[in-house]
Amino acid sequence: MNSDILKKTREDAVAIFKKGVEAVAPDAAVQRYCRRDDNLLTIGEQSFPLDAYQKIFVVGAGKATAPMAAALEELLGNELTKGVITVKYGHTATLSKIETVEAGHPLPDANGELGSAKILEMAAAAGEKDLLICLISGGGSALLPKAVAGVSLADKQETTRILLACGASIHEINTLRKHLSVIKGGQLAAAAAPATVVSLILSDVVGDDLDAIASGPTVADNSTFADCLHILARYDIADRLPKPVLDYLIKGSNNKVPETPKAGDPVFDKTVNLVIGSNIEALLAAEKEAARRGYTTLVLSSMMEGKTSEVARVHTAIAREIMKTGHPVQPPACILSGGETTVTVKGDGLGGRNQQFALCAVSDIAGRLPAVMLSGGTDGNDGPTDAAGAIADNTTAQRAAAVKASVAEHLANNDSYHFFQALGDLLITGPTNTNVMDLRVLLIPK
Image 1: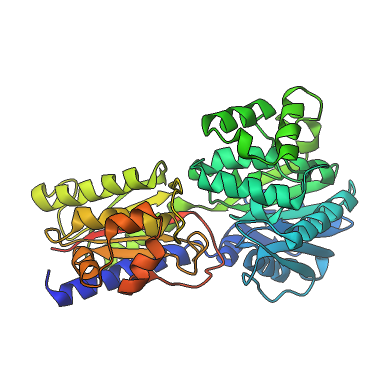
Image 2: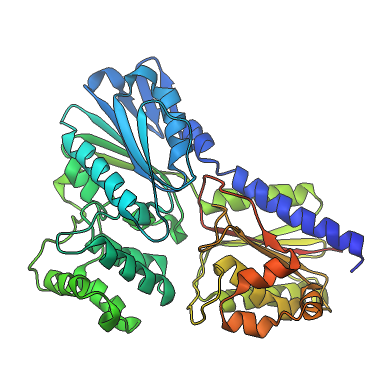
């Protein structure tokens, strides 16, 4: 590929990705779904007369919660009594009435415990004539780590490490999180009852399953302790968990501790949950930008999940098909997909699923294919790194060989970060203050 064409194609990929992220900005999402006419607050299709409530509280957790809170403060003004939110370190905004607690993600920490305790206390203080608005976004599970009695923060941290490394899906991870928590799995709504509870949710979960987003603190939980034990068996990790964690899950399966609240429980009678931003919205905005730049576009799905390596191969197979036959779209082509894949960590390198995805694509698009593959997290953080993801193209393998960076060795060691860092191909955006899973951009120029 001509170097000028390659440069432009890479620039296009980044611009398309960023346009997708812009479309799910959390403050704009709140403004789209919420409006106020004098004392009438309309959220989605439901109306809430503000003068009907004695107090209005705002609580929340997640990477995108601070700008959501800022938009809500502006909307509610003096009608807002107070609030508290927990966010990832650095993911803040200027707030006046809502307290911000910065905490650890993806591994929970003591600040997360403090923040979730304050949120639970505020919810419990809400009365029948009060309104509790809950702001939820991706990352909320780790940022609401207050555990059941007998399970320590260290136990939760070790359990989280094991779950993140074993290849379990986010639905499976959150099933266990809910059953080790006093706030997730509908328990925040239970604490707030009989207050009116409205949750504004930015989805980072495939299919926008409400009970999985941030482990569903205001949503009826359809999973059970028995499901938890099945997950442990599926990944053969029961004997690696801290003993208090395993003991508690076994007690739950034997009906010796209470289950999380289920559908039909009266604690949800005055609870409303509304998704105000999701992966498909990011994909559609990216599609529009790609078309504006002259690409024939195809959105595969916002629900891609499974092993990162396998999903990457699907994308590179489509790239080869486009080049050979012009199907499913003719070049210049843009293939878009979203969702969240999983990596089974076996090495001790540094990276995340998006960087691993791009690295898995390197060999398949090497040399013969004029192609650019970008994979990035819409939150700006891929795994425990400062990169959102990475960009690979048909020259990546050749450039890597020149600096003696082995694709196979970095894949085996889960060290995608250092591979792309050596080539200057990390996607660095900084915190975006939003989170709707991942966005992948595959470009085939004409």
